[in-house]
Amino acid sequence: MITGGQRSGKSEKAEELALALSANPVYLATAHVWDEEFAHRVRRHQERRGPQWTNIEEEINLSCHDLTGRVVVIDCVTLWLTNIFFANNSDTDQSLALAKAEFDQFTIPDATYIFVTNEIGLGGVSDNVLQRHFTDLQGWMNQYIAQKADEVILMVSGTPVKVKGPSLSSSSPLLTSPHRGGTPSGWTHSLGGDGPQGPILHSLFSILHFDIQPLDRSLQTAIQEKIDNLNKPKGSLGRLEELAMQVCLVQGTLTPSLQHPCHLLLGGDHGIEREGVSVSPREVTWQQMINFTHGGGGVNMFCRQHGFKLRIVDVGVDYDLSSVPGIFDRKIARGTKNFLYEPAMSEEEFDRAIQIGSDLVDDCIAEGCRILSIGEMGIGNTSPSSIWMHLYGNIPLDECIGAGAGLDTPGIRHKCEVLAQAVERYRRLYGADAPAIVPIRYFGGFEMVVAIGAMLRAAEQHLIILIDGFIMTACAVAAIKLYPAVQDYMIFTHCGDESGHKRMLDIVGAKPLLSLGLRLGEGTGALCAFPLVDSAVRMMNEMNNFDNAKITRYF
Image (cartoon, rainbow, N blue to C red):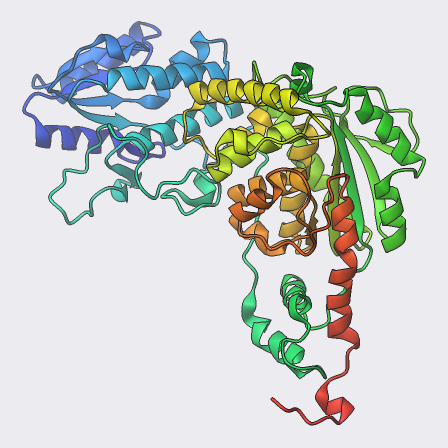
């Protein structure tokens, strides 16, 4: 595959490579011939290439041409996708599925394929919704072709840069043909992962641009010296010392603070609940949201106990709560769609959810917040969490599914069957190696995606993030798959009683602070763990050291 920007020399390089391999290569052009002027342009290009080329014009159905044994330049993927996109009423999901199927069928014959494509998502975000959708389609299909390709070249100002495949010094002609054996070793689709394209090229959605940096460890030695010089045996405060180090590094100081702690309680309903995957009916979501405004929930009690400011936010409850005092109305829709049959949310809804989460954090920061916890209220949200655990952790789906709010054995069996069907449909559309961002939109709840947006923004602004139970851990894992550095800012507060929570934590190697058998949700476990973080900070700020206490340092 040869990719690059406009006028970067992609087509010229493809033609050069094809002629190096064959005396009579094939040029398969995918442009739609709009009028006579364009037809004249096509003929002019054919004449320029010369009689040694076999020229084929094909807008969509590449596989109808048998090119066994030939060297073929397909120029270009962008125009081919444009034709598919408009032939399918600009439906991104359907267009992507059809493009993948056509690509797979076309590349079955044993031939040498040189795909020319464009990187169209690097020049900023368009204010045109249709253009953003097509940019997403192009990015996904480029990844799919690159995944199958033996070699990938990025053209920069006429210069080829090897992205994947044998080194430039080898005898390889730097061409691409499809892998027959699946995903190449070491390839990752995660945003910000260590795959060949890195974090920027993987930003598939318009709003997902966060500058999350790994912790600056320049103060680490000084922080450790301060911890070790406190009047105690070295290391004797165990995990509190680890917490103190983390908080100091996040805030970039030897005197950390946890001023104005905030708790976001996010409510949303799930379309998959209609399939009977939860013992609780969906009206419990809005009923509990109203109960929270009266101060009667577990989350209210713990927020009062530990001095957290509570924000109750409706981001997708299937009920009109707009007139209820004490609830912030940020409703995206009245619940997600049923992911058994279609993606849970549209790309616009995903973008909006991420932005809402980011904005909520900005509101907290404006009030002086340095530490954030997040909770959720959404009947059915263990279902998307279990699927994320399955996809991100490569764990058998049935081992990721538990009782949720109290399903019996037949109920759990039914839940497994429903979620397995949903995952099967998803894999038919996106394959087994879709970018990490895709299952977030396809399966997630609005409250879950808002939480992810909040986590990413909080990390970008160097806040401490307290991670709660099974649902919020699933959101944390998803956020880490998008931006691995976000984990530096997270404290995993407890291992709950929900089936699979420990295995979910193991996906990212997290060490929870508490194990109390909690499974209420709402962020209650995170709030319960706050005093430990507070103790770590107080240790740094209030505990005397050997010198001031005039105690002999004996180690």
